Image (cartoon, rainbow, N blue to C red):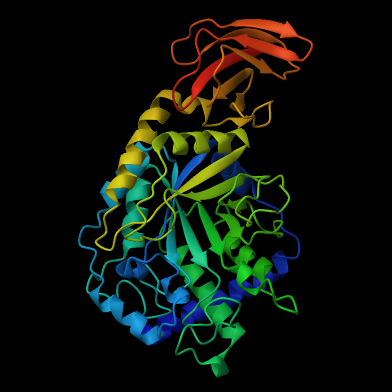
Length: 438
């Protein structure tokens, strides 16, 4: 029966890829996809979750790459992975309470370990661990129940599978047989896994690819066959968005553009120098220093910093995907939960100035940013030590008032723009003034 099941699965994938290769020649988003893009843009806030057996080492998600480690010795930790405190309901509830509208979960990271009951490899959380539970199934069910979108991160590169053509990372990993490199086999493996994820777990909001940059130094450009793979995804779930953290201008077939550790148009981390497209935008950022759990990394950003980063992202017309790295026992770190709670309280009071907004009329300033929703312009003041604030606005301001208590703010028109005569020197993480414009 298993042989027949695998034969049918292989045949279906082959058909999908063949048809997808034809469709990939020209990508035209479906109405369902365009609607999903709009909803994604309105969400503005999501939570990234980096979790796998690498959490057992408490050294971050790149532990396998950062030291000369034997892949077979590394794999033995799966036999001790028993996250008995994992509770999908608690996770999703805490994330929903933060004000986030979607979760992006690492289905398979660069270390090759799959966090669902995949038939393509026994190296997964159900077959290789004493835990034996499909966490993606539990997360998907709970997300659907609580009305949170589930996105799935998927690694294009693999430090442990022999078939994957080595790139610039993972070269220190011991035990990989380079004589067995077989790109067609590896490509088929990925497509079979993606087919499982998009077939067995209900509606998936997006597939979030990573690892394309592993071959960015190749003398001959590496062909990832992305368009055919993207077409496969869109065929399986037309509304599913495709994003790729490749640090370059979006390819055909992608529905969102990703910026790593930087706001669109900025490149302080050296990973986001690409031009800004007209696709929906997303910035991913860490709460502390690492993506995966690292025991000694307790340098969490303050709540005020996180709130300002979220608002600044919206001020660029982008979503913020804020990362949490769960502990090996399955719990979200207490410091992260505390900040999620704080962000939720702030969003409950002020989320209207973030959700469903577009980038404001004024580019980011030293004092803060702006967001817009129709005739309403929200002025987010982070750092200003005076009662007067000059706004370089061209539009007419009909009315101005503080967002929190609706107290009127006087406005003066000058040649340089509009001056807000504030009632007090702005305090707090984000002092918001709402303008009704014409």
